[in-house]
Length: 155
Image 1: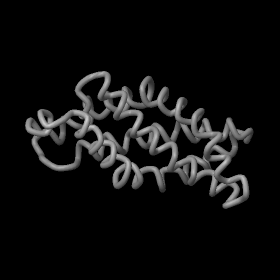
Image 2: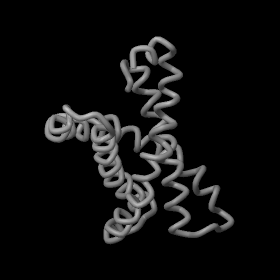
Image 3: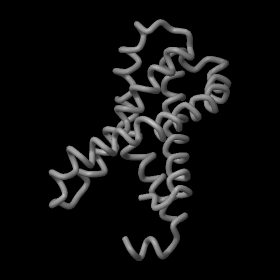
Image 4: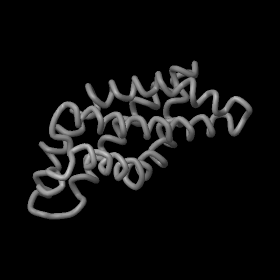
């Protein structure tokens, strides 16, 4: 896990960057299919979505998810080894980010709020497995490289 602000920023950028890219591709495909403007939509929307995602992650969802996890959920699993703690935090993060970013997607594309429930329902179907199986491991591997051999010897 990140130990300082620099590492936290790198970790958040990796997580948010890869999740926004994957979810943008998914949502644009669901909305319009593979049209001529598909990749243009992905590239044009990516920077704004990344900024919003990082703000949501850094100031709202991340702190709230970690507070809920460490105050209410993690104490029950402290005596056990395994994946309960990282899976709990990942699940809370994904649900919080899906909540925020689905609203962002609906609003930025000019849809009415009545489109929000459908957007919210479909997004966790990809976001949770993508975070747990692909993005999380990649971000942790990059963080381990940034932390260097001293950090790996301690862990």
